Image 1 (cartoon, rainbow, N blue to C red):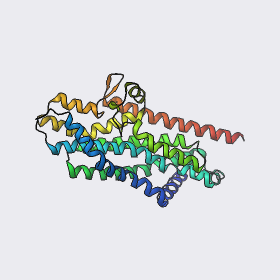
Image 2: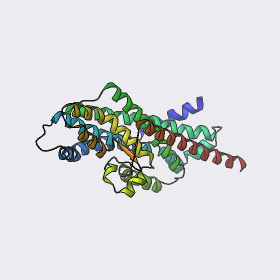
Image 3: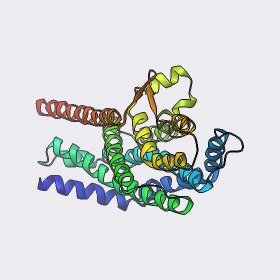
Image 4: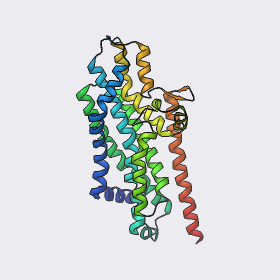
Length: 301
């Protein structure tokens, strides 16, 4: 346990000491928030207004709260995973610099080294994700706050699980990387594609039927929907209480993936948590098996 703590502190210290990697990981979510608010905020607001019958009175403050919730959920859905890949790149950099070989020559067990990378990456990613969450909450507080205390607790839970998922996924993928070029390639692919396939940039409901069926098998889709629900549901309920017909509000919830469907069957929030949690357990198990087999191979040699 003492060795594991030393490795975790070492990895976290190296991550935050690397100013380029740290500021890139920290600034990226904040830049996304600015871009979302600047360019997508009006687009989201206009799409909601189009769903409301002409002549019906709309509370602009509540509408702003709905838009803010959608922006925050999109930001967190993407950054919790992409930042995990950035913070977990230390695993690959140690291979590139030869530090991993040096550590392997010591009495440190391979399993201890592997979990040191995982836990330190999780902690680093969680810190940055909570900073991003705080920035997003400040933004929502300015434009229209309708979140409850329960919503906040559930959002933090969603972030926690999504960071665990992102760290586990990056741990499995990064295990097979060994060069700087591979780091850059994987980072570019994840940062450019993940937001689309998880429904953060474009709602799943806007995809074709075939694509919707494919992405319904991806855990990130359910994580995005969980964040949508907890960032937007209270504002949507307030919108309905202000006089907007329930069917219109539900239609809006369908449009932004608060209501998620698996082959035309609505998926409940507990099932979303089950899918995300099971995915985390599965990926961590794969990571453990990969490192176990690697260590056995070394012992035989």
